[in-house]
Image 1 (tube, one colour):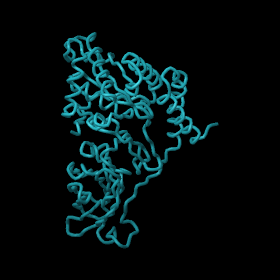
Image 2 (cartoon, helix red, strand yellow):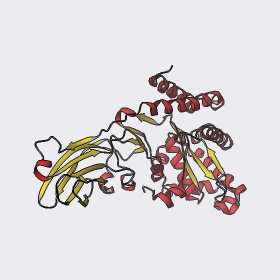
Image 3 (cartoon, helix red, strand yellow):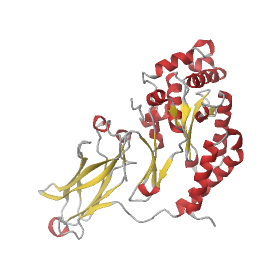
Image 4 (cartoon, helix red, strand yellow):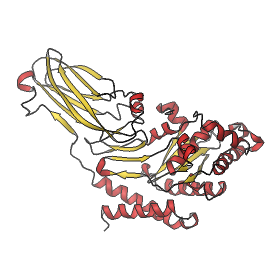
Length: 393
C-alpha cells in the first residue's frame, strides 16, 4: 500500500509530465494524474488532525494574568491563520476567515461586559467587539482587523509583524494584553488555501485569485489595440456577435499574445503543508506583459483580464497543481464554457490550446463530483457581483 509520501511523490512526478511535457504525450499521464490526485486527497483527509491547535494564550493556570479567582472571567485566544495573505486580506470574510478567535467565559454570579480588541502593529486598524456575557455563559469573538492596502503594498518578501490582542473587563480591569509574532505573506503571493491551526482544516482561498484579474490596467490597452486588428471585423463586439462569433475574438487575443512572444515558464503550483500554506507566486498582468514570461497562473490571470476587458465572461479554472482559463460563449447558457491552456502560447495554435484545455477540464470534472476541490471554476462575473472580489489595481 502506498504511503502518503509515496502518493505525493507520484503526484509531483505526474504534474511535471502532464504540464511540462509535449502535448501529444500527456493523454495517458493525464488519466493517471487525475486518479493520483483523487487518491492523495482521500489519504490526506484521513490523517487530518482532530485536536485543537493555534493557541496563543489562555488565562487558565497562568499566574501572570487575571482569571477566575480575580475577575471571574476566563479568556482563551487562538490564531486562525498560519500566515496572512496580504494581497487579498482586505477582501476576506470575517465569518469564514478570522485572524483570531477569543473565547471568554463568565464564571462570576453577575452579567459581565467584556471587550476584545486586536490589531497588527503598523499594518491594520483596531478590531473591537464588546459583549455582555451572562453568568455561567461564554462568548466567542472572531476578529479580522482591517488591513491598510497602502501599508501592505511594499511587502515583497515574507515579513514578521506583531499582533496585539487585549481582553478587557469593562467594569474596570484589564483581563490580558498580549503580543504575538505573525507572518505576512508578500503581495506577490497568490493564496490558494490556508490551514486553520484550530481545526486542522484547509480553508479554500482560490476565489480571491480574481483580485489578480485586472481588466482596467492601462498596460493592457496597447495589446488590446493590436489584438483588435486580428479580430473579426477588426473590432471586439463581445456577445453581440452571438455564440458563434465569440471564438474569433478569443483567438485574436491569443495570437496577439503570441506576437508579443509571451512564453510559458514551467512552474507548478506550490504546496507546503508544513507551513500551513498552499500558494503560488504570481505576476500581475502588467508585470507579465513587461517580462513576457508566465507560469500557468500568470497566463491565466492575464488572459482572464483581457477577456474581461472586452466584456466577455471569463473564469479561472483550478485543478491540483495547475490553472487555466475559461470563457462562456453564451452568458445565458451555463453549459457554454470553453477552455484554453495558456501554457501553450509559445508552441501551439489557438485551436490546439483550446482542445487541450477542453480535454483537461473534462477529465477533472468527471472525478470532481464528490471531490469538488479537484476542479474549481471561478467565474469572474460571479466573483465580482456576489463575493466582492475586486481588481487589485
